[in-house]
Length: 442
Image 1 (tube, rainbow, N blue to C red):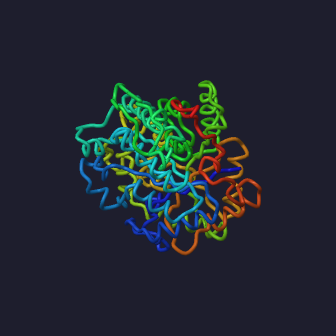
Image 2: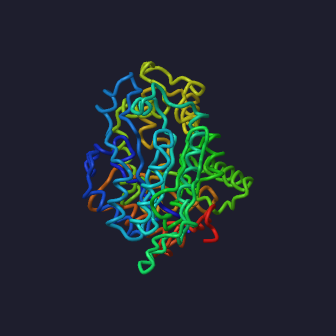
Image 3: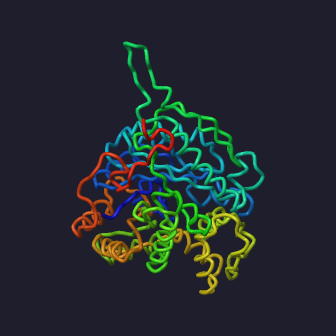
Protein backbone atom coordinates (compact mmCIF):
# COMPACT_ATOMS: atom_id res chain seq x y z
CA UNK A 1 0.00 0.00 0.00
CA UNK A 2 0.97 3.61 -0.63
CA UNK A 3 1.93 5.61 2.48
CA UNK A 4 0.78 9.20 3.06
CA UNK A 5 1.98 11.79 5.56
CA UNK A 6 0.55 15.28 6.10
CA UNK A 7 2.87 18.26 6.55
CA UNK A 8 1.23 20.30 9.28
CA UNK A 9 1.99 23.99 8.86
CA UNK A 10 0.32 27.18 7.68
CA UNK A 11 0.97 26.46 4.02
CA UNK A 12 3.86 25.53 1.77
CA UNK A 13 2.90 27.69 -1.18
CA UNK A 14 4.29 31.15 -0.43
CA UNK A 15 1.09 32.75 -1.68
CA UNK A 16 -1.11 30.34 0.27
CA UNK A 17 -1.49 32.39 3.43
CA UNK A 18 -2.98 35.19 1.31
CA UNK A 19 -5.60 32.95 -0.35
CA UNK A 20 -9.18 33.91 0.61
CA UNK A 21 -9.96 30.30 1.63
CA UNK A 22 -6.95 30.02 3.94
CA UNK A 23 -7.95 29.45 7.57
CA UNK A 24 -4.51 30.17 8.93
CA UNK A 25 -2.66 33.47 8.85
CA UNK A 26 0.56 31.66 9.74
CA UNK A 27 0.14 31.90 13.49
CA UNK A 28 0.07 29.16 16.14
CA UNK A 29 -3.50 27.91 15.75
CA UNK A 30 -4.04 24.89 18.00
CA UNK A 31 -7.80 24.52 17.33
CA UNK A 32 -7.06 24.38 13.59
CA UNK A 33 -4.18 21.92 14.04
CA UNK A 34 -6.42 19.70 16.17
CA UNK A 35 -9.19 19.73 13.59
CA UNK A 36 -6.81 18.90 10.73
CA UNK A 37 -5.08 16.14 12.72
CA UNK A 38 -8.39 14.41 13.36
CA UNK A 39 -9.39 14.85 9.73
CA UNK A 40 -6.10 13.26 8.60
CA UNK A 41 -6.66 10.36 11.00
CA UNK A 42 -10.19 9.86 9.64
CA UNK A 43 -8.62 9.60 6.17
CA UNK A 44 -6.29 6.85 7.54
CA UNK A 45 -3.07 8.73 6.78
CA UNK A 46 0.12 7.21 8.14
CA UNK A 47 1.52 10.26 9.85
CA UNK A 48 1.39 13.94 10.73
CA UNK A 49 4.70 15.69 10.12
CA UNK A 50 5.88 18.86 11.91
CA UNK A 51 8.90 20.58 10.37
CA UNK A 52 11.14 23.10 12.11
CA UNK A 53 13.70 25.84 11.62
CA UNK A 54 15.74 27.36 14.42
CA UNK A 55 15.71 31.00 13.36
CA UNK A 56 13.85 33.68 11.49
CA UNK A 57 15.71 33.73 8.19
CA UNK A 58 18.06 36.70 7.87
CA UNK A 59 20.31 35.65 5.00
CA UNK A 60 18.52 37.79 2.40
CA UNK A 61 20.13 41.23 2.69
CA UNK A 62 21.72 40.30 6.02
CA UNK A 63 18.54 41.08 7.94
CA UNK A 64 15.13 39.54 8.72
CA UNK A 65 13.19 42.49 7.25
CA UNK A 66 12.27 40.95 3.90
CA UNK A 67 11.45 37.60 5.51
CA UNK A 68 9.02 38.85 8.13
CA UNK A 69 7.51 41.38 5.72
CA UNK A 70 6.58 38.89 3.00
CA UNK A 71 6.48 35.36 4.52
CA UNK A 72 4.82 33.50 7.36
CA UNK A 73 7.65 32.93 9.85
CA UNK A 74 5.95 31.28 12.85
CA UNK A 75 7.38 27.84 13.65
CA UNK A 76 5.64 25.99 16.51
CA UNK A 77 8.18 23.95 18.49
CA UNK A 78 7.69 20.37 17.22
CA UNK A 79 8.08 18.21 20.33
CA UNK A 80 5.58 20.10 22.46
CA UNK A 81 3.15 20.12 19.53
CA UNK A 82 3.59 16.35 19.10
CA UNK A 83 2.67 15.84 22.75
CA UNK A 84 -0.60 17.66 22.19
CA UNK A 85 -1.29 15.80 18.94
CA UNK A 86 -0.64 12.46 20.66
CA UNK A 87 -3.30 13.26 23.23
CA UNK A 88 -6.08 13.98 20.72
CA UNK A 89 -5.43 11.15 18.24
CA UNK A 90 -5.42 7.36 18.52
CA UNK A 91 -3.95 5.80 15.36
CA UNK A 92 -2.09 8.28 13.18
CA UNK A 93 1.70 8.58 13.53
CA UNK A 94 3.24 11.84 14.74
CA UNK A 95 6.67 12.96 13.57
CA UNK A 96 8.70 16.07 14.37
CA UNK A 97 12.04 17.61 13.49
CA UNK A 98 15.21 17.50 15.60
CA UNK A 99 18.44 19.24 14.54
CA UNK A 100 21.54 17.12 15.10
CA UNK A 101 23.59 20.30 14.76
CA UNK A 102 21.99 22.15 17.66
CA UNK A 103 20.28 19.55 19.87
CA UNK A 104 21.99 17.17 22.31
CA UNK A 105 21.41 13.42 22.04
CA UNK A 106 20.42 12.71 25.66
CA UNK A 107 17.67 15.34 25.72
CA UNK A 108 16.41 14.33 22.27
CA UNK A 109 16.32 10.66 23.23
CA UNK A 110 14.32 11.37 26.41
CA UNK A 111 11.78 13.62 24.67
CA UNK A 112 11.21 11.25 21.78
CA UNK A 113 10.95 8.20 24.05
CA UNK A 114 8.37 10.07 26.10
CA UNK A 115 6.35 10.97 22.97
CA UNK A 116 6.41 7.31 21.94
CA UNK A 117 5.07 6.29 25.36
CA UNK A 118 2.41 9.01 25.39
CA UNK A 119 1.22 8.00 21.91
CA UNK A 120 1.46 4.22 22.53
CA UNK A 121 4.04 3.72 19.80
CA UNK A 122 3.23 6.33 17.15
CA UNK A 123 6.29 8.60 17.30
CA UNK A 124 8.77 9.47 14.56
CA UNK A 125 11.67 11.90 14.42
CA UNK A 126 12.91 13.81 11.42
CA UNK A 127 16.65 14.27 11.86
CA UNK A 128 17.98 17.35 10.05
CA UNK A 129 21.39 19.00 10.03
CA UNK A 130 19.98 22.58 9.70
CA UNK A 131 21.10 24.81 6.87
CA UNK A 132 21.91 28.40 7.76
CA UNK A 133 24.23 30.75 9.60
CA UNK A 134 21.12 32.37 11.09
CA UNK A 135 20.39 29.16 12.96
CA UNK A 136 24.02 28.85 14.06
CA UNK A 137 24.00 32.33 15.59
CA UNK A 138 21.15 31.36 17.90
CA UNK A 139 23.35 28.62 19.37
CA UNK A 140 26.59 30.47 19.99
CA UNK A 141 28.25 29.92 16.62
CA UNK A 142 29.15 32.67 14.12
CA UNK A 143 28.52 30.33 11.16
CA UNK A 144 27.00 26.96 10.43
CA UNK A 145 28.96 23.71 10.42
CA UNK A 146 30.49 22.71 7.09
CA UNK A 147 28.51 20.29 4.94
CA UNK A 148 30.83 17.37 5.75
CA UNK A 149 31.03 18.13 9.47
CA UNK A 150 27.29 18.39 9.98
CA UNK A 151 26.67 15.03 8.29
CA UNK A 152 29.42 13.42 10.35
CA UNK A 153 27.79 14.88 13.46
CA UNK A 154 24.36 13.62 12.33
CA UNK A 155 25.62 10.05 11.94
CA UNK A 156 27.04 10.10 15.47
CA UNK A 157 23.88 11.74 16.83
CA UNK A 158 21.73 8.89 15.48
CA UNK A 159 24.08 6.33 16.97
CA UNK A 160 24.02 7.90 20.45
CA UNK A 161 20.24 8.38 20.56
CA UNK A 162 19.57 4.79 19.53
CA UNK A 163 22.14 3.48 22.02
CA UNK A 164 20.34 5.40 24.76
CA UNK A 165 16.98 3.87 23.81
CA UNK A 166 18.64 0.44 23.96
CA UNK A 167 20.21 1.12 27.36
CA UNK A 168 17.02 -0.28 28.93
CA UNK A 169 15.93 -3.85 28.34
CA UNK A 170 12.30 -4.19 27.28
CA UNK A 171 11.50 -6.03 30.54
CA UNK A 172 13.72 -3.92 32.81
CA UNK A 173 10.93 -3.00 35.22
CA UNK A 174 10.16 -5.80 37.70
CA UNK A 175 7.82 -3.83 40.00
CA UNK A 176 7.69 -6.56 42.65
CA UNK A 177 6.27 -4.64 45.60
CA UNK A 178 6.22 -7.69 47.86
CA UNK A 179 9.99 -8.15 47.62
CA UNK A 180 10.78 -4.47 47.11
CA UNK A 181 12.40 -5.03 43.70
CA UNK A 182 11.71 -2.18 41.30
CA UNK A 183 13.89 -3.15 38.31
CA UNK A 184 16.43 -5.71 37.12
CA UNK A 185 19.94 -4.16 37.21
CA UNK A 186 21.08 -6.56 34.49
CA UNK A 187 18.66 -4.93 32.06
CA UNK A 188 20.45 -1.56 32.22
CA UNK A 189 23.61 -0.61 30.32
CA UNK A 190 26.07 2.28 30.39
CA UNK A 191 26.53 3.19 26.75
CA UNK A 192 29.89 4.89 27.47
CA UNK A 193 29.90 6.70 24.14
CA UNK A 194 33.03 8.76 23.46
CA UNK A 195 33.03 10.12 19.93
CA UNK A 196 34.17 13.06 17.84
CA UNK A 197 31.16 15.20 18.72
CA UNK A 198 29.50 13.65 21.78
CA UNK A 199 30.53 12.13 25.11
CA UNK A 200 27.57 10.39 26.75
CA UNK A 201 27.62 7.82 29.55
CA UNK A 202 23.95 6.84 29.89
CA UNK A 203 21.77 4.98 30.56
CA UNK A 204 18.64 6.98 29.81
CA UNK A 205 16.13 7.48 32.64
CA UNK A 206 12.92 6.49 30.83
CA UNK A 207 11.93 2.99 29.66
CA UNK A 208 12.73 1.89 26.13
CA UNK A 209 10.12 3.26 23.69
CA UNK A 210 7.18 1.00 22.77
CA UNK A 211 8.44 0.82 19.18
CA UNK A 212 11.99 0.09 20.37
CA UNK A 213 13.09 3.15 18.41
CA UNK A 214 10.72 5.84 17.14
CA UNK A 215 10.72 5.77 13.33
CA UNK A 216 13.66 7.69 11.84
CA UNK A 217 12.83 10.14 9.05
CA UNK A 218 15.48 11.96 7.05
CA UNK A 219 15.12 14.60 4.37
CA UNK A 220 17.50 15.51 1.55
CA UNK A 221 18.94 14.55 -1.82
CA UNK A 222 22.69 15.36 -1.68
CA UNK A 223 25.39 12.69 -1.95
CA UNK A 224 26.25 13.02 1.74
CA UNK A 225 22.60 12.67 2.60
CA UNK A 226 22.12 9.59 0.42
CA UNK A 227 24.97 7.78 2.16
CA UNK A 228 23.70 8.64 5.65
CA UNK A 229 20.08 7.82 4.83
CA UNK A 230 20.92 4.52 3.14
CA UNK A 231 22.58 3.40 6.38
CA UNK A 232 19.99 4.70 8.84
CA UNK A 233 16.72 6.17 7.55
CA UNK A 234 13.39 4.38 7.65
CA UNK A 235 11.33 7.11 5.96
CA UNK A 236 12.89 9.51 3.48
CA UNK A 237 11.22 12.86 2.75
CA UNK A 238 12.61 13.99 -0.57
CA UNK A 239 12.30 16.89 -3.03
CA UNK A 240 11.77 15.51 -6.54
CA UNK A 241 9.95 17.75 -9.02
CA UNK A 242 9.65 15.26 -11.89
CA UNK A 243 8.71 11.61 -12.31
CA UNK A 244 11.96 10.65 -14.02
CA UNK A 245 14.16 12.27 -11.36
CA UNK A 246 12.08 10.60 -8.66
CA UNK A 247 12.47 7.17 -10.28
CA UNK A 248 16.22 7.65 -10.57
CA UNK A 249 16.57 8.71 -6.92
CA UNK A 250 14.37 5.84 -5.76
CA UNK A 251 16.60 3.28 -7.46
CA UNK A 252 19.85 4.90 -6.30
CA UNK A 253 18.72 5.05 -2.67
CA UNK A 254 17.29 1.52 -2.57
CA UNK A 255 20.42 0.08 -4.25
CA UNK A 256 22.65 1.98 -1.83
CA UNK A 257 20.71 0.65 1.15
CA UNK A 258 21.04 -2.89 -0.18
CA UNK A 259 24.80 -2.42 -0.53
CA UNK A 260 24.87 -1.74 3.22
CA UNK A 261 23.07 -4.99 3.91
CA UNK A 262 19.63 -3.48 4.42
CA UNK A 263 16.36 -4.74 2.96
CA UNK A 264 15.27 -2.03 0.46
CA UNK A 265 11.70 -2.47 1.71
CA UNK A 266 12.83 -1.24 5.14
CA UNK A 267 13.09 2.30 3.72
CA UNK A 268 9.97 4.16 2.61
CA UNK A 269 10.70 6.97 0.15
CA UNK A 270 8.06 9.72 0.23
CA UNK A 271 8.50 12.69 -2.15
CA UNK A 272 6.82 15.89 -1.05
CA UNK A 273 3.89 17.15 -3.14
CA UNK A 274 2.05 20.48 -3.18
CA UNK A 275 -1.35 19.48 -4.61
CA UNK A 276 -3.67 22.09 -6.08
CA UNK A 277 -7.08 20.39 -5.98
CA UNK A 278 -10.52 21.70 -6.94
CA UNK A 279 -13.82 20.15 -7.98
CA UNK A 280 -12.88 20.29 -11.69
CA UNK A 281 -9.74 20.60 -13.76
CA UNK A 282 -10.77 24.10 -14.83
CA UNK A 283 -11.34 25.22 -11.25
CA UNK A 284 -7.99 23.75 -10.20
CA UNK A 285 -6.18 25.65 -12.95
CA UNK A 286 -7.92 28.85 -11.83
CA UNK A 287 -6.88 28.20 -8.21
CA UNK A 288 -3.31 27.56 -9.33
CA UNK A 289 -3.29 30.83 -11.30
CA UNK A 290 -4.65 32.78 -8.32
CA UNK A 291 -2.09 31.29 -5.92
CA UNK A 292 0.75 32.18 -8.27
CA UNK A 293 -0.53 35.75 -8.55
CA UNK A 294 -0.30 36.11 -4.75
CA UNK A 295 3.46 35.46 -4.62
CA UNK A 296 5.97 38.29 -4.32
CA UNK A 297 9.52 37.55 -5.54
CA UNK A 298 10.97 38.51 -2.15
CA UNK A 299 9.05 35.65 -0.49
CA UNK A 300 10.79 33.05 -2.62
CA UNK A 301 14.19 34.74 -2.69
CA UNK A 302 14.37 35.12 1.09
CA UNK A 303 13.37 31.46 1.49
CA UNK A 304 15.99 30.36 -1.05
CA UNK A 305 18.70 32.50 0.54
CA UNK A 306 18.18 30.84 3.91
CA UNK A 307 18.04 27.30 2.48
CA UNK A 308 21.11 27.91 0.31
CA UNK A 309 22.88 29.85 3.08
CA UNK A 310 23.70 32.36 0.34
CA UNK A 311 22.44 35.95 0.01
CA UNK A 312 20.53 36.41 -3.25
CA UNK A 313 19.81 40.08 -2.55
CA UNK A 314 23.17 40.98 -4.11
CA UNK A 315 21.74 40.31 -7.57
CA UNK A 316 19.30 42.77 -9.20
CA UNK A 317 15.91 41.13 -9.55
CA UNK A 318 15.76 41.92 -13.27
CA UNK A 319 19.15 40.27 -13.97
CA UNK A 320 19.56 36.68 -15.15
CA UNK A 321 19.87 34.16 -12.36
CA UNK A 322 23.57 33.22 -12.05
CA UNK A 323 25.07 29.74 -11.72
CA UNK A 324 26.02 29.72 -8.03
CA UNK A 325 26.09 25.92 -7.64
CA UNK A 326 29.58 25.92 -6.13
CA UNK A 327 28.95 28.84 -3.80
CA UNK A 328 25.99 27.64 -1.73
CA UNK A 329 26.83 26.06 1.62
CA UNK A 330 23.37 25.20 2.93
CA UNK A 331 21.00 22.73 1.32
CA UNK A 332 22.87 21.58 -1.77
CA UNK A 333 21.03 18.69 -3.40
CA UNK A 334 17.62 20.30 -3.90
CA UNK A 335 19.09 23.45 -5.48
CA UNK A 336 21.13 21.72 -8.17
CA UNK A 337 17.91 21.22 -10.13
CA UNK A 338 16.63 24.73 -9.32
CA UNK A 339 19.81 26.49 -10.47
CA UNK A 340 20.17 24.34 -13.58
CA UNK A 341 16.54 25.00 -14.55
CA UNK A 342 16.93 28.75 -13.99
CA UNK A 343 20.14 29.04 -16.03
CA UNK A 344 18.96 26.84 -18.91
CA UNK A 345 15.69 28.78 -19.20
CA UNK A 346 17.33 32.23 -18.88
CA UNK A 347 15.12 33.18 -15.93
CA UNK A 348 15.58 36.42 -14.06
CA UNK A 349 16.22 36.49 -10.32
CA UNK A 350 12.65 37.70 -9.70
CA UNK A 351 11.19 34.98 -11.92
CA UNK A 352 13.11 32.31 -10.05
CA UNK A 353 11.93 33.69 -6.71
CA UNK A 354 8.28 33.51 -7.79
CA UNK A 355 8.68 30.09 -9.46
CA UNK A 356 10.42 28.54 -6.47
CA UNK A 357 7.87 29.97 -4.03
CA UNK A 358 5.05 28.13 -5.83
CA UNK A 359 6.09 24.69 -4.58
CA UNK A 360 9.65 24.92 -3.15
CA UNK A 361 10.62 22.64 -6.05
CA UNK A 362 8.25 19.86 -4.99
CA UNK A 363 5.99 18.08 -7.48
CA UNK A 364 2.73 20.02 -7.68
CA UNK A 365 -0.13 18.06 -9.28
CA UNK A 366 -3.06 20.23 -10.37
CA UNK A 367 -6.58 18.99 -11.07
CA UNK A 368 -9.76 17.41 -9.79
CA UNK A 369 -9.49 14.77 -7.04
CA UNK A 370 -9.55 12.02 -9.67
CA UNK A 371 -6.94 13.80 -11.82
CA UNK A 372 -4.56 14.23 -8.89
CA UNK A 373 -5.10 10.67 -7.64
CA UNK A 374 -4.25 9.29 -11.09
CA UNK A 375 -1.00 11.28 -11.18
CA UNK A 376 0.01 9.98 -7.74
CA UNK A 377 -0.90 6.43 -8.69
CA UNK A 378 1.34 6.73 -11.76
CA UNK A 379 4.33 7.77 -9.63
CA UNK A 380 3.65 4.94 -7.20
CA UNK A 381 3.15 2.18 -9.79
CA UNK A 382 6.16 3.27 -11.87
CA UNK A 383 8.56 2.86 -8.94
CA UNK A 384 9.18 6.53 -8.15
CA UNK A 385 8.09 6.34 -4.51
CA UNK A 386 6.46 4.42 -1.68
CA UNK A 387 3.98 7.23 -1.10
CA UNK A 388 3.99 10.98 -0.52
CA UNK A 389 4.29 13.77 2.04
CA UNK A 390 1.37 16.12 1.39
CA UNK A 391 2.30 19.80 1.73
CA UNK A 392 -0.98 21.75 1.49
CA UNK A 393 -0.66 25.11 -0.28
CA UNK A 394 -2.78 26.48 2.58
CA UNK A 395 -4.91 25.08 5.42
CA UNK A 396 -8.69 24.96 5.27
CA UNK A 397 -10.88 24.56 8.35
CA UNK A 398 -14.07 23.07 6.94
CA UNK A 399 -13.04 20.93 3.98
CA UNK A 400 -10.01 19.39 2.37
CA UNK A 401 -10.35 18.08 -1.16
CA UNK A 402 -7.16 16.06 -0.82
CA UNK A 403 -8.18 14.16 2.30
CA UNK A 404 -11.86 14.00 1.38
CA UNK A 405 -11.50 13.68 -2.41
CA UNK A 406 -8.10 12.40 -3.53
CA UNK A 407 -7.69 9.82 -0.74
CA UNK A 408 -11.03 8.08 -1.50
CA UNK A 409 -9.95 7.87 -5.16
CA UNK A 410 -6.69 6.22 -4.10
CA UNK A 411 -8.62 3.82 -1.88
CA UNK A 412 -10.96 2.95 -4.76
CA UNK A 413 -7.91 2.27 -6.94
CA UNK A 414 -6.64 -0.21 -4.33
CA UNK A 415 -3.39 1.62 -3.58
CA UNK A 416 -4.23 3.09 -0.17
CA UNK A 417 -5.63 1.53 2.99
CA UNK A 418 -9.26 1.58 4.04
CA UNK A 419 -8.37 1.02 7.72
CA UNK A 420 -5.26 1.06 9.89
CA UNK A 421 -3.63 -2.36 9.92
CA UNK A 422 -1.66 -1.95 13.15
CA UNK A 423 -1.55 -0.07 16.41
CA UNK A 424 1.94 1.44 16.01
CA UNK A 425 3.45 3.64 13.34
CA UNK A 426 5.98 0.92 12.54
CA UNK A 427 3.20 -1.59 11.94
CA UNK A 428 1.30 0.78 9.66
CA UNK A 429 4.46 1.52 7.68
CA UNK A 430 5.37 -2.16 7.44
CA UNK A 431 8.62 -1.68 9.38
CA UNK A 432 10.11 -4.22 11.78
CA UNK A 433 10.96 -3.23 15.37
CA UNK A 434 14.72 -2.96 15.95
CA UNK A 435 16.54 -5.44 18.17
CA UNK A 436 18.02 -4.13 21.40
CA UNK A 437 21.79 -4.07 20.86
CA UNK A 438 22.52 -4.50 24.57
CA UNK A 439 19.63 -6.47 26.00
CA UNK A 440 18.28 -8.64 23.21
CA UNK A 441 18.09 -11.72 25.44
CA UNK A 442 16.31 -10.02 28.34
